[in-house]
Amino acid sequence: MVTNATSLGRSGLFDWLVQRFSALVLLAWIAWVGIGIASAPEFGYPQWRALFAATPLQIFSLIAVLSLCAHAWVGMWTVTTDYLNEAHLGRAGTAIRLLIQAVCLLLTLACLLWGARIFWGSG
Amino acid sequence: MSQVLVSIYRYNPELDSKPRMQSLEVDVPGDRDLMVLDVLELAKAKDPSITYRRSCREGVCGSDGMNINGVNGLACITPLSKAAGPARKLVLRPLPGLPVVRDLVVDLSQFYEQFEKIKPWLINDEPPPAIERLQSPEERAKLDGLYECILCACCTTSCPSFWWNPDKFVGPAGLLQSYRFLADSRDAATTERLAELDDPFSVFRCRGIMNCVSVCPKGLNPTRAIGKIRNMLVEQGT
Image 1 (tube, rainbow over the protein chains, first blue to last red):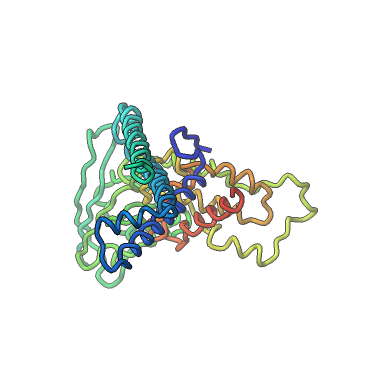
Image 2: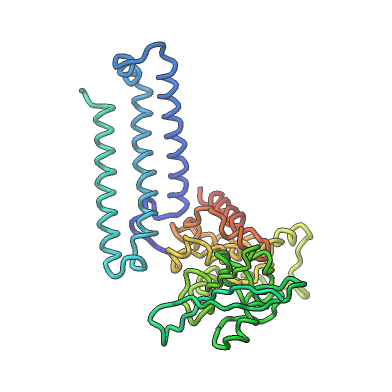
């Protein structure tokens, strides 16, 4: 078995399931919001606020943000382990991969917290 | 007689600083189709230093896997007419992604190491019966499309996931053989075999692009086998 400390769940099956499940969640969120927009006779800022004021969509939106973060991490981790390695970049490959992975992780966490603030914040 | 322009990858790592392509014009009979290997033999008659592997010349030994006009295949069973088309030009390169030993000969060590990893033998510690371990016709039929692999490496070396991670991703040939033993009713190590594969690389680096399926000279389908391994992992691991 090939071990890896930076993959999301350490298990190939777990990461694979997370990527597929999160994709379905995102699809459902897009459909929900899309139908919400399309079904309103007139759509502007007040309707947008009203749509997201409903608790079920607030909860589902946070789940969607979590799904987006998990999906992005599995995808970016795959890209970095494919292309940012010693075979492509020479001896600096591992350092560059870890650096990019760290940047991706920070951006993902920032996205998660920002999303939580938007959907659950007071403003 | 008609002429075919053959462009051959030439590289001797001990002497050359970098690879080059050598062009040769080869006379081939106009009244019948040749296989790419026949054309290569004619080219070698002109320049005996051209190096390649070949043995059975009938698609059984898997020695002469190479990249023919951009597509991996066995030179001995690839017709010139199909490979070169009306342009009558043949470009021969070694299988991609592996170190070149010389010209069209590649070092298959990484390919074999991945094959060894999946334990390509029957594991069953129960005392063997007096004659043989029997299978029903239905159980035996599950091995069709799996056991025919000749390990020519055409599939694995056409797979970008293997190019990027040849030390971690088992590759289509190895995974086809892995499923051949997972599907075998006589094998008793299914759980252990699956546990060895449940990491982020060995199986799951397959992105399903099916290059392996399109190049397999035996018409096998490693992507389907990988899908079945994945289903078995889902059944066992969730």
